[in-house]
Image (cartoon, rainbow, N blue to C red; front, top):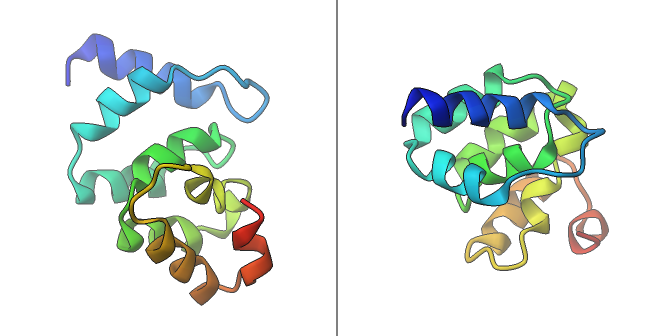
Length: 111
């Protein structure tokens, strides 16, 4: 990933929860270039008030990566964000992971 793309990505992350506008294309390009370990490291490191869409992109369809987010209690605002991705091929696996971490079926189905 180029330095310019990395800087743009971090600017998007730091916008936080109050900023509804997130460049989805930039997040897709940036997160698609990361392997699972990098995604998990970022989930552990980025500010908890980062835009939930960033967490959603980092998790993708990976239940193991989603578990890292769900264990991060301070990032509770972003916990269900990965389930709000309507075209996720792995949504059911992510839903099972959320339930395993204490969310109800109702919480999961409400996304």
